[in-house]
Image (cartoon, rainbow, N blue to C red; front, side, top):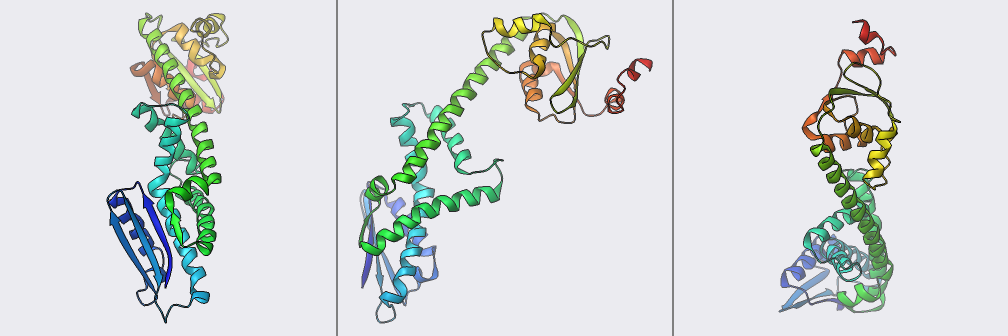
Length: 309
């Protein structure tokens, strides 16, 4: 007794094989040869999978709902793993008009980060939860459809029945494009600042940048005297570059203005964004210090003790 047929059009034989393999592995009922039979038919540029119940063991009323649910999840797994990136690429090309492969890959990277639902890129639990939520949205639609229809054209179903899913992908791409553009503008600005630093002559041998915690910093010159981070010249530096960038307490622009030969950064949080930015701009002029005598004195809340030696 034939239950349903899944048609793949404009797809390679390898893609049909992958869907067939996923369906075979999706649950005991779908590959229990005494109850369910699945046959993959191949044809150039397309393929179709016939799923049938084997009588008399298969009972339509008792077994069919479970089979439809398993099939829905299996096909949803296929769509996410094999078709989702294809849909993202299509949206990026057709609706946001990006054609360079490097740009498309960069945007897809942001898409994947957002679709993972992870605050941190390598958070397995968040990634799993985000995947299951997306799979459930697709599989519910598929299961309902298979209960009513015996012919499933996957291309047509994706285009006309999964609008909520496709709308979610469009929202993701829109967010990803914004992030991609902002990141590129940031990198261009960093490159401009690096060039600005490169053409400047050093005005002092070194400075100490002390990270006191959070967003609080202290900047000392080579004489161990505080450098005013609200210096007007520092503000002029950023305005002259015609960029609007929120550097913490104008530390970066002050460093560019005083142009030290070497910057010693005293911090226990080298991953902090402003420190990463300084390291990018000043490159080999930066040296990170984990815990020196100066750091110890600052920890005791008495920076002046350093001068007493």
